[in-house]
Length: 393
Image (cartoon, rainbow, N blue to C red):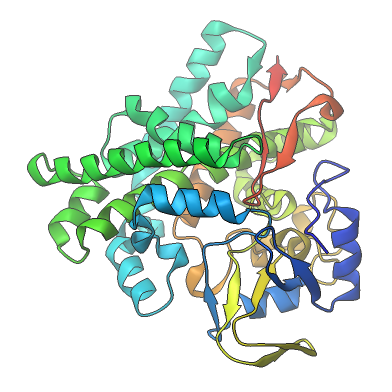
């Protein structure tokens, strides 16, 4: 089978994937570059596999063709050597240790006031401009973009340097040539930023990395590139689609507004329900092994559907509805094991501050278009996103 991506009911898994999850067994999966591997859909198998050290991580998604993949790899010129999410121990351990201190719950708590300032500024701007507004471009996207700029120590005016390449990467109409050009420019930018931090240090993560001396130049620039990309896109979609999930049913929006002190529980359930990152990074078996009764050969790929795992009724009863009572904190929206998302605590804080701020400032907020008319979809990289989210109040 080829991985299905169309969510017929906005937030439910594609019916074919949901049916596979009910069966439970891994299924043969055809990748866009011609390889054939395996797809895991159930929660228990997904959780076990992505923490299994018998599998390594590779830079390939099921729907990315070989030409596009090669064009991006050529354009970044070895910077993937600093992509911590694509490394296994011992390199993964070394790279993650170099940045982990800035992403602890305590350090994120120190940034919360700054996040609140950014959110308040954006809400002020929306209020001045008046309705209608595109909640993605006016609110959801600028929040994590500005937070990551402050964290890495670059001007907020540099946002386009990483927003544009990400849009190209996630746009299904982009050609390999467009992707190569966008990422070549992005690679030049991050190399320049790292070099400036040597002569113009600041109180920021990139300065820490440069002065720490633990990473070489390629690793420094690659780490910066990955942090720019992962630091904004998925969080922006979690904010935008989280608002959509609340607003599509007025009772849900009013319940959230009345129960804002439980925003942490709301956001955990929304993260599970939305499953913005639909698949894990692809794993490759290091040895012959058995996976849920299926023989997997050394070198074969395995992809985990985080979407179906988070909607597995065996783990989350009535998974296709929003419920605070289910205890969603075991969800896999941020992955699991040693590769669990480095920025998970920062993403949670941004989402919590954004949604509570939005509800407090605009209690009458509502969608300005029918959900069926919105442009939502999954990119080849397995990121569920909305290109726009029109709202009014």
